[in-house]
Length: 343
Image 1 (cartoon, one colour):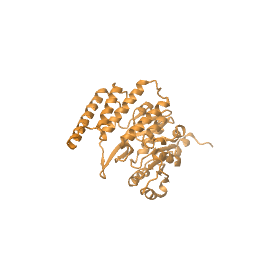
Image 2 (cartoon, one colour):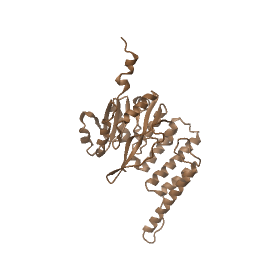
Image 3 (tube, one colour):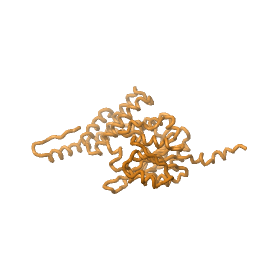
Image 4 (cartoon, helix red, strand yellow):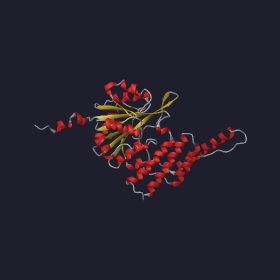
């Protein structure tokens, strides 16, 4: 007797396919337990946890060993974040992957929420993303960073290829379909020294699959000053590489100068913000000028390219910061030396 349709629908593997949580780690033994514990505490019933030790020189191996068979531990020579994630994918058995960095953690219902949306959106959905909460670590003390409540809390919005080309819309903590990686390839390890390998991957997936973002904070990111994202020079090099690859994909033709000029202006706006936050007012000022000069028009729907009034205010703010920095350097130097250098 053939099984009924109801029997097929209620098969446990169909309702709750295996999700592999991939946790790459490099010298983050002091953070790793929080990440692994949050993965093992998921309310979602079918989970495997894969920890990839990317050549750590600290106590990562001992921390992982304490979990025994509850996790799958893989150690390799250092290959960078993209290489570690690729190793984790190769060691996983799930139909879906969730990527969690070792210094971050999940909420108990994270996978349940993400899977509900993934299953509702169907097989043309490649990624379900969410918003993060932030914790800052300073002098060994963790502090919650106050963030605005998401607009339309809990709603699900589409994220297009052009959205991702314009800006990083969400962190790497996504639920991704394994078949999408089989079709679109793995993380590009050539981003090893730059970051942006996750956004590059999402762009390639977005060219074939649909991507959705839940307007809810379902993961916690820990910012501690040694994250890749804290280095503006490497970040900006990664963004330039990303835009170069994006132009070759053909999703938006190179003759669409309105699009690519706006992207170039947005790069300078991002650079201005990053340099301002890292205490380089001269570079922030120059990039603010470039952003406004290249594309002085208002931004496009859903993009983070601000209108000219906002960017004029940025220009004023960066020029004031530059002046303060110049005055401080002048009056802190010995008599007979004046001036400052902007690079």
